[in-house]
Image (cartoon, rainbow, N blue to C red):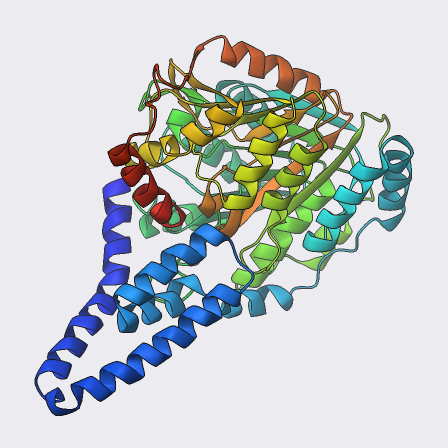
Length: 507
């Protein structure tokens, strides 16, 4: 699967490289008499391009990468940036999303949530308002959120809830692969579709490039299941780099599932790929489901020729929490925005942490601002911990993640690797008060380039279960230490780490 993905990316870059080679050929043959003048003009244009990048508000590591590329090969570097590095290329996606009319927000619920949160912690209320202003999604009372420490546990609950569907089943995932997990879900979906339930599936075309085919989609449609691929890879275009990494299952607008778990058998440990697969997820009921229904509706109606009927959503009663278990704000990240919600949320949470801040992530490739937030929190005495995989799924990305270890460990951050296998969980818990579970990895692609979804829980009992699971997982980890299992930086080690960190935004 990963080899094919790499080949696709190489093919995407190849035209720009060929353009540079053709340009050199023209420059040194036909245009040889004017080569010096042309080279001067290109150098001036490259300087202006670099000046534009330097003054642009963007992640520093990302800008450094493009500066090196453009200065090394001005023509092809500029073409690559315009295709893949410039957020202006998101306009086709943005235009389609802006044309979608969403169900109305429950403003009363949001106001009540803010009043209660502000009474306890004004600073946290400010953070959540910032996330709402950035994403358009508001907090509400959390009625019930059930935490699942493994995909093995989440999967049966998903099947059980799907069997109860009366109006609709919406599923959106990065990876879909035929096997026990997906086939079991399709069987229920087909039965429900035959009963008149509206069933819709969206998957990412690149994420499922080696696991799901057009023939599989045709089979779904024959069963009455609507299915579309997000951002299909039909040809090279500027939106190629922006993928739908979101994961959600919504039933009747009453129940929602999310977390790191894709729809493939390794996620439920039915097959073994990289040792034991550690992932996490949750089930929501009550008002917290509304935001997930909005997220799916927005994407489906933007990218499908068969929009969700308004009467289907209008039939969902405005849910009122029969019980209160803290508060929840569910939102999605978008590369179409210039403000990066999850990256800034984690910086905020680390800056407010007093006792501890613990994180699950499969990959660790941080931008400068988030790296500084981890370092500052640890240096002022906060117990900062990160659980990483012990068995990698991508060796190069794992090595890149290791290039961040030394600076974090030196500051006092504890990094532990899960020895039984691969950690795919994405979440954090801070001071027993606030935490997140979602699809957001601590790497550049998740934080800046992918569409992701994330849920912030405030004073919810789910946080207790998340904390207990973190400690249980850490007991199965080996702690990384400078000078023991992490090398103290030598010149060559420093050089390799520096090169890897420059290219981290592309992985």
